[in-house]
Amino acid sequence: KLPDAAALAPYLAASTCIDHDHPAVAAKAAALAPADASDEAVARTAFVSVRDAIRHSLDYQQNPVTRRASEVLAHATGYCYAKAHLLTALLRARGIPAAREPMPAPAPRSKRRCGWARPIARAWRCRLPPA
Image (cartoon, rainbow, N blue to C red):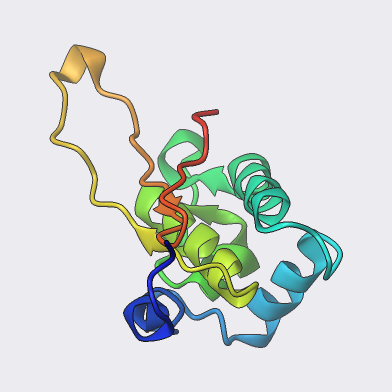
């Protein structure tokens, strides 16, 4: 059974960092897939888009340090958390409830990988597969 609308409201709201109401973020979300596409198709397309089109700031030694979803989209760069903000914003803009997961505890330095917190479609408790 899906949670009621009131329980999902926090996972659809805009915030300082997850600014899905920004015109550029809303336009990108609309362009991801046709309006009648399934939520799963939109989520997969959004995930691949952010994974492939947004450079990880540390890997590419890029500035500026972005935080808001709109900044990440504008500069096409961001750290893990910033990429997660953009992915969460794209999903919310399409009406898919989502939240950024907290990062797991850091692994020993030799085994450390970017955990890039994946948004969860809370209504369906589904996770996107790792890339």
